[in-house]
Image 1: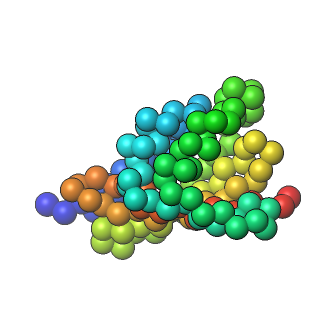
Image 2: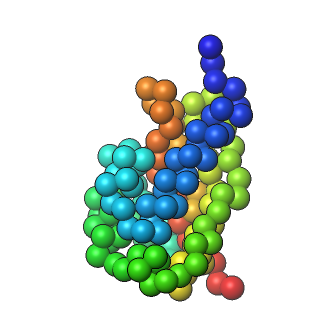
Length: 126
């Protein structure tokens, strides 16, 4: 039996919740589980182009203090999820570390599990 939209949206929301929590507390092992090993993290931060492999991105996350360690409030949220068959795009908002990040995450359902394939990010000035 094929999963319906509601089941897939709930599964994607669970992946995004893991993403948010893992970024918030700097849990590299959990991040590695929800990203495809060949994922790219691209976009811009305050107008400066950003292009990293998953390993480069996780190395940067590992080396910085987490929002949790800095006593920041948890404000990350899912803004939208669009699903077509086994692919999806999630629009998320991650205000943290003095940035106002928006991510567009592409996901693919592989072997019955949703995984983040790529992450596009930008900082939006308030």
